[in-house]
Length: 112
Length: 114
Image 1: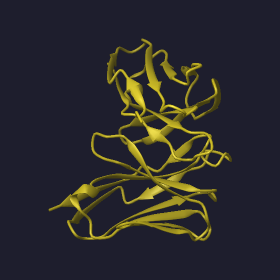
Image 2 (image 1 turned 135 degrees about the vertical axis):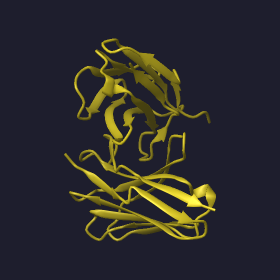
Image 3 (image 1 turned 90 degrees about the horizontal axis):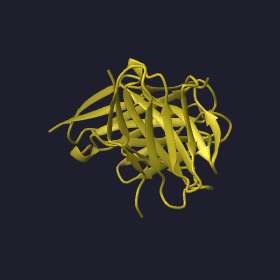
């Protein structure tokens, strides 16, 4: 089966702009998670979507938001970009009833 | 919030030597998961431990969950170059058993010298 896909691979934005990142889960997976992997900070939980609803969010400001579409794909939006938002953003999906998460290759966001 | 601490941050070993990474939580965990991230890659699920004192093996990898469910370890016997990468432990962010998100340790970078 095809894995989790993310686009774009790389994204360069300037401070104050908005960024949109996209994720397609594995077929049959309804839960989508977003994580930020910044240098020196490890993987930090951002958001969890399931069945089109935001179910949980991590300790991030409201300018990090997103949505999940009827086909279970998801979008992460980051508004008013700051330099410290530069990181690898990883999307993961999970099948209902299972616990393991499958990660995509990530989007490398660089804010200048 | 819940924190998961992982040590060491880096581990250099000679090929063929053993490797161990340790994970500690400030609170009791309902379960703990382990992931591996190869250089330039993304995290890949290895295993989940649920029971107090649980020990699971995958070939040369041995995973343990502490009796108090606050700590865990991953031990690799006779490391090979294919073991290179960062090993992360992860616990649930809340009471949802991990379904509501995972809180990751900062990982242990395994570097193997041939």
